[in-house]
Length: 267
Length: 105
Image (cartoon, rainbow over all chains, first blue to last red; front, side, top):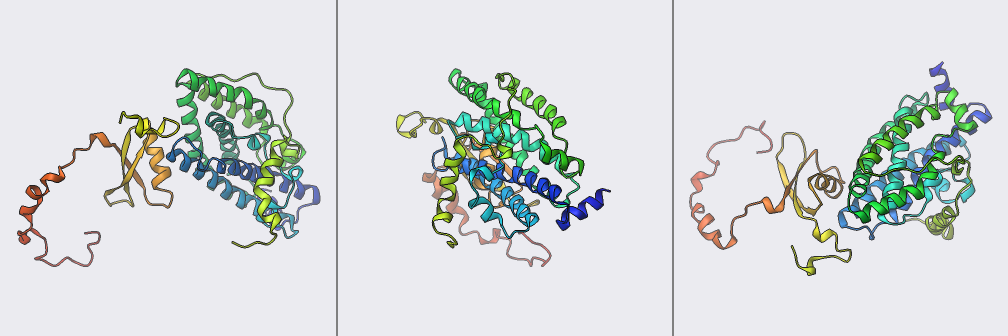
């Protein structure tokens, strides 16, 4: 059963809605990595210390590497000749499928760390579960990305605890960042039709059970950091469905300016 | 490190103590000094060293040592310390053949 599904997925011959859902799920992972990687790139030359500058850049490069693998794959499944670059640089905001949290502005260092820690936690759950995907290629990408994500999490969690359990000022800023960003986590493990279809096919994990693992870990981290989180919001954001906050358009204008102004430009 | 002149514009990084970083490039080889960096404590020093000095697969192991813990010889005393060895070539292990199988010597 599992092998048969893998064969279908690999051949890209699955029925229309099935394949569409498969592409959707790849874009959600890939776009989240791409957009967050772009945000981290904005820190280059501005981080509080040279060592952190390099650290954030390393994280961003890992994420863009993940995006390349995932977007290339999505383009191949789609079969309309779009490669990683055309997907990254020639789509408009409503076609992006990233988590709304990923596109939120850097803010201060604390905001960047909280955003990173939240998405690292989400990726840890997903990539870990995806290692057992019936889609062998996606499983291999997840296995590679998981190693990177474990380091990202170590980095962001380390700063969360340091600054949360730091001075009165650093704790105030970290709590403000959590209060501002927590509402975007409702989207993390809310599954829609695409994700349910792919979960049935074994391509994606069931999302709702992962939410409990993620929340338990997040609350343990927050306790160590002497921080807390606000109550969950009932309304999930819908970046995964292409409904974004106003920030994504600005980010894309910056990221896509060159290839759109000079189509086909070569380095 | 107390003077204001060592502070950067944020006034933070310059207050972090300095660490010396040693990297082992592969199993079986020794750790070699590769440079130094600032970090708030030992744990952060390892993470910074990973980010600053192993981006191009330079190593499989990292040591970080507080720079203040290193005891150094005085350059003024270099003559007294090192000159006397100069004319004692018989101390070099050059009087026997090294087998081809021995690497990294």
